[in-house]
Length: 319
Image (cartoon, rainbow, N blue to C red; front, top):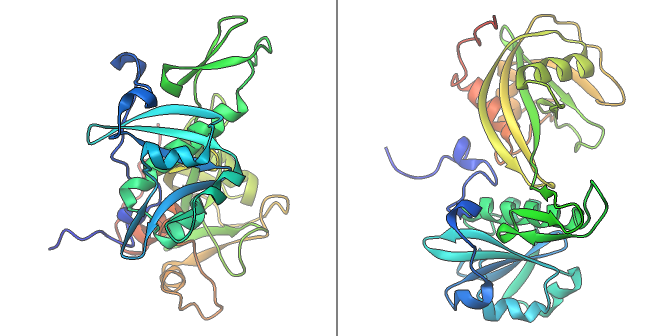
C-alpha cells in the first residue's frame, strides 16, 4: 500500500484540503502585512481570477511575496487569513485589470474552476485559495450595514466587519447546500439541469433553508424536484464550494417511492439508474454517452463510493 493520493475518492475533491491555520480574534490582534516581513505571503484575487506564479517545471502557487503583490497596486480589501507553517498569509482584492500587470510566462490569472481543472496548484493550496475568494467576496458585498445602512469597516483581520453607525458586528457566512445520493434497491436517482453539459447527470441538490435540518432539506428538495419521497438520510462527506461561499453537504438517502415527476423549472430530466449504468457513466463507457461530474465534485464521490460498495448499508430510519 502506497501513500499516493486517491484520484477518484476523497483525495480528489476540489477545495477540500488546506494547510491554513485560520486566524481567530481569540488569538489576539492580527498582524499587518506591512509589519509581517518578507516571509509573509499574499493571495491576490483580480475579480474572479487568482494570480498565480507559474513555472513550467513546477506546480504553480498563489502565495505571492509582498514585493510581487505590490505590482498590482492598491488593494480594495486586505485581510489576514492565518498561517501556513508559521508563515503569515494575507488575501487582497484588486481590479480585474491588475492581472495584466503580471507578465507571462512567469504569471497567469485563472478562475477557480480552471484552477482545479488544470491542477494548477497543489491540492493543499486549493482550500486556502477558496477561503480567500469566499472571504473577499463577502467583504465586497457587505460594505454597508444591513441594519442601519451605515458604512462598515474591516475588523478582526477580516473575519468580521463592524458598523460605525449602530455598532452591529457582521460575520462571514457560509451557505449550506444538501447534495444527495437517493437510492432505492440497486438503483439511484439522478437528474440534469438545463445548464449541464450534454449527457451529464448528477445527484440532486438544493440550499438548506432557515430552521431546516439537513435531513429535512434532503427530503424536501427531492420531493420538490422529482416527486420522490425520501425516508432515512445519512451524512457521507462535505466539500467547500467557493461560488461564492457554499458548503456542499453530501448525504445518502433512501427513496420510498419510484415514480418520478420532474419540475421543469428545476430539472430538464431525472430518472433512476442502475449501479451497472452508473459504473459505465463513471468510466466514460455508457452506450448513450451519458456521464457524471468529474472526480473533483462531491457528486462524483457519492456515486463512486456507492458503485464501489463504500456506501453499503442503508441509513438507519429516523425516530
